[in-house]
Amino acid sequence: MSTEYFAETLIADQHRRYLAEAAQERLGRQVRDARAAKHEARRARRWSLRPRHAHAA
Image (cartoon, rainbow, N blue to C red; front, top):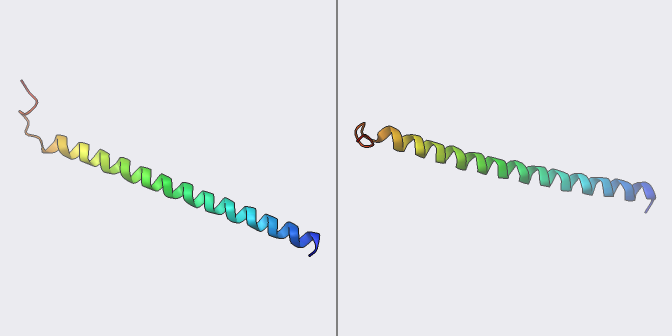
């Protein structure tokens, strides 16, 4: 078990952890964007389907 081997495994482990965190972050952002888009679409649909006189006096 040489020092170089130890250093390489340490670097590989850190890199793997970094990749996992980056993937998790990307997934979270996709979920957030999807939720926001869905909410936006629902709001737009609600207002566009409403009859013109519904919110007038």
